[in-house]
Image (cartoon, rainbow, N blue to C red):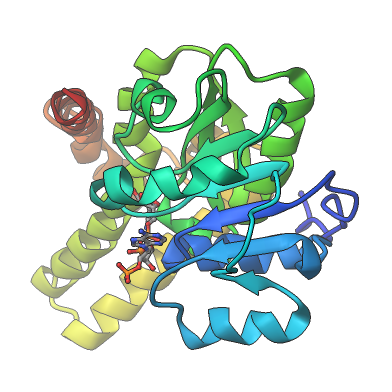
Length: 280
Ligand SMILES: NC(=O)c1ccc[n+]([C@@H]2O[C@H](COP(=O)([O-])OP(=O)(O)OC[C@H]3O[C@@H](n4cnc5c(N)ncnc54)[C@H](OP(=O)(O)O)[C@@H]3O)[C@@H](O)[C@H]2O)c1
């Protein structure tokens, strides 16, 4: 059984300034993670027109919030504004970008070519797709680099993104639509599972509040068990399924024709197509 990892300080020696564009939900989750992982607050700049209280409070620790004056070259700029704000917001980063600056975007659906057009020619850029458990440091992010990103900058990207969870890499940007459909949108499928289990419990005669609690804790606890276990999901499932028992009876329905596999294959294919269409 894996134990939760203790947080070390991989960002203590981050080589230069980090500029965050957009300190909303995701931006704040990254800020918290970066500071917890040892990033020097005096090496942090935040660009955010309407900073929340928690963001303003960081200035007391030396973080620069919407600084005036000549911007210094950053080691990394991180883009966490909504995709629709990007055309207006991203150009503000240009003065921070020098020859060796790394740009990391977590915007859904904004491809590398959009970022390459918006930032100075030749900028090293990583397009990354996180998911919503990032808010508690338990997301999974897939990162995709452009041709300018060095192996050192990959490592820097991983160190920055690890603040909100696990990081995977792909060099094939075409896969980002399927990534968006699986892990980007995936938390909604899991929340729907909890809703559907609660509704099914009510249909089986349970009081609604009890059904909701049982469904919620079953999904959350099973997720945590999967997270901590070295076993894969199929083996964990087999381990709780006795032949001829109650779980087996349910799985016969769920794994039968038109069951989970078919439904999720159809759902993820639909989301992949939508992601491709939105990217244009
Ligand atoms: N939330 C998720 O689960 C999730 C998952 C995957 C990817 N993402 C991506 O993460 C990004 C951030 O999402 P979020 O949920 O954190 O959104 P959010 O809470 O709306 O945060 C975006 C922040 O950017 C600020 N902003 C707007 N215009 C700006 C500008 N010109 N300069 C600087 N900051 C500006 C916004 O300020 P105002 O509020 O004043 O407009 C807001 O505080 C999005 O691109 C999204 O696609 C999010």
